[in-house]
Length: 392
Image 1 (cartoon, rainbow, N blue to C red):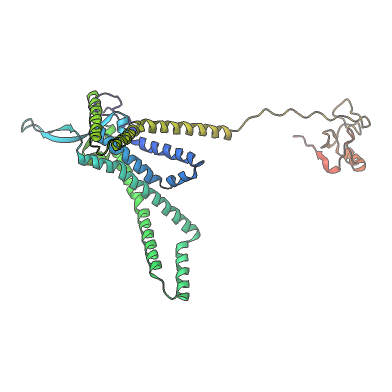
Image 2: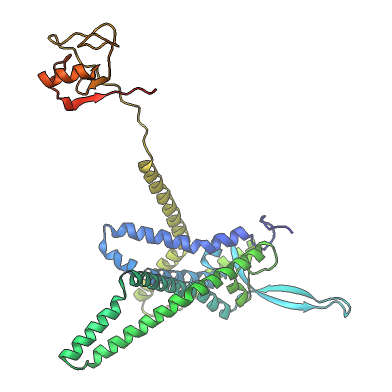
């Protein structure tokens, strides 16, 4: 069985479909990072980050609606020169003795398919993101409850006991707030219990469809495309030209529909021109944002690696040898002899302040009496004498 890795034919490769599917997440990461950087200087941008899911869903709603309306493709698919086509499967019988063969005929997208495509591209990812965040909060709450106990139950119990002792009954607002809190808590528990299974099932189906698409066993890359009966194909040169002419016709009709005084028409025309320019250059701008995000991510990651990498420095030079005092005991020519007794050292010991080696008994007596090193005359005590041991 052959894998489709080339770029021939109208059927896009697995890598093109995978890149088109992963592009929205990259765009979202780039926008979030950019807003986070701008929020360091403009704190009001944090309000946008607080509603990150809603902001990105609204942006993708505008882009996906415009892209499906003009090019019959999603925003990411149009960047790769792909188009969506409705797949109609007909049974073709040559004769009664032969088996029936399937014939797939591609048609343009209907309005219902465009609307459902927006639902699958915008609404379902938004709901999945909200379920993921709810599941994460519920998991953190369960972990905190397992460590410290359920603080909500303790608080509710204390609040009820104080109310019963002081007032005897609650008012309607407190009862309603408590019921709402219990309902939200119950919904979070249901999401926490069901979301892992839903997520696992969704990922399993996505993997199965992608594997079958890679093995050329199906023409649908995902379950959503199969449910909508849509095939993704490469756009031909004629289709690109037709798309450009169709966009120009749509915009000319929208300008003809403008009503009002001349200055109002000019204002509306200017706003439409600005909106068209934003939509036309939105793809380029978002791709530039993704590139900028990846570049900054690589830059900061490289900087962190350079800062965290251990620096190997050359070993420092040895300290200069201590100077022998003029009034001190001179050193013997043979370094194995003790400067005090001029005999071979017994139990060699070093004076820590100078580094000279003596017999332990000799240096101990001298230091205990004169409180200094015998050679350098540097102040010292018997606590600064270190015994030396040789390996046998």
